[in-house]
Length: 288
Image (cartoon, rainbow, N blue to C red; front, side, top):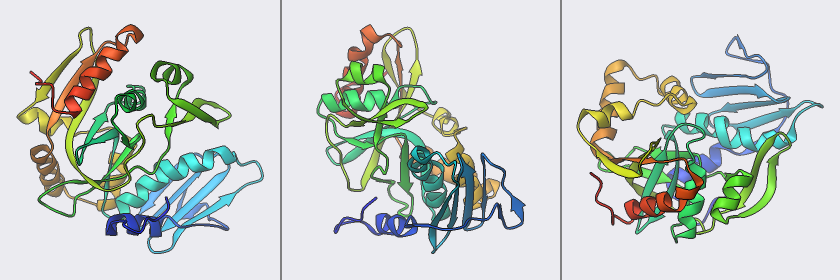
């Protein structure tokens, strides 16, 4: 992620910490052997070994990458932009969440849901409706200001399946990887590359009827329990006790407006669901 002249201190820190070099990487970290396909976070260091690639991050030293002769080079950018970046963000005090997002009038609306929920496809469709992409798949939160939650702009390229490209009209580019049936795509609405406050978190769910419902009360707290790997990394990196975890979750529940967006997974109704999502982003839709 190149550093812009007007980058925030948080962006500058992450750019500095994600500097890359090539060299030898050990198979263990702090005495713990990491098998092929595994990863381990210890204090201010992180080791990941997969696809013939090894990544070692130490705070203040950047990332060292080792490639075996049989390494899948197409996987390098995916690991760097995924688990490695998330671990670095967590070690440095930022909180990544599993979400794709758009920007509108100086705020971010993030859409979250399990893998396969259609987050990236929806972001591409919202781009066709004039809403620029803020991030794809991972949204990094800066929680340093107790008065607001700041979102850091996305570090990943938009990735779509052939079906999603056809459905959204997005411009497909090169294939993500030989074994991955996805293509990088140009965001139809462009991208926003500056930090912005988080305005709303929308939970995508499958359902028979298209509807938006405001999430209130205790449900806001329980909705923030995520089983995605980024939550595990954050808990490991920050070493929060139960009281601190509760306090952080309570803060997020209080500060983030939340909506449940239920939609049929029917291509014939996709345009209507994108229109409803756009109304939520623009605050034109009163959820029930």
